[in-house]
Amino acid sequence: MLDSVVAAFHEGHSAETIRQQYPAASLEEIYGAIAYYLAHSAEVDDYLDRQEDVWSQRRAASDQHDNTLVERLRISTEPSQSAFRRAIRATERRRRGTSAQ
Image 1 (cartoon, rainbow, N blue to C red):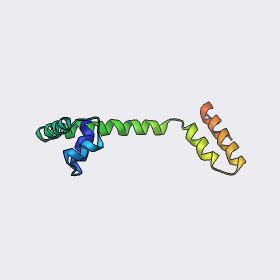
Image 2: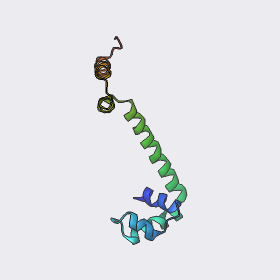
Image 3: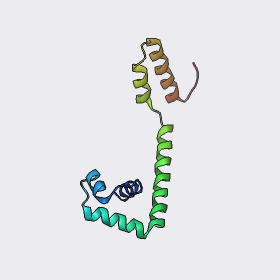
Image 4: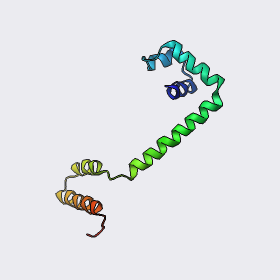
């Protein structure tokens, strides 16, 4: 929650507006998070930077995985059956670890 509150605070939102965006948090918790951030901004900024690095690494790792479902969804929008067959063959080759046609 801290990262969401800090982001909204940086965008100029008031505690009341942030509370409306996150109804699970009380107004006291929102003010507390803002007060904590103001008292420890360097530490919180370092923490948020580390969190962004973690998410960037996870996104990169996810992009490297075999996205067969995504490929099939893309193919399903193509009208050509031959394109579908080519993609299926390419997926099968990747699974086998070859690049032969």
